[in-house]
Image: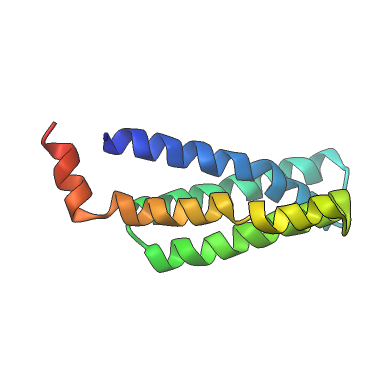
Length: 122
């Protein structure tokens, strides 16, 4: 397995979170729906997810774990607003933590010495 591939998959996982975070940020904005509010929401969401990537690659597992909790919470807020308290929301209680928790485990994998040594041999 290649460390670069793991980092690319991590980046893709983080990218999936951006739209949900941006939607929540825009929804709570006093200027919700305004073009500038949408732009700022995406800037905020991209900076949030980029921070998670940087913390993960830098080996800050506790920080990455804290951001996984925040990211899961944003997912739950997004689905609660979009579908309400329905079956879909209940399904999201299971699905929402999947990507943030996976991202947190990437932090462990990327910074695992055995994994780094394994990827250097090839």
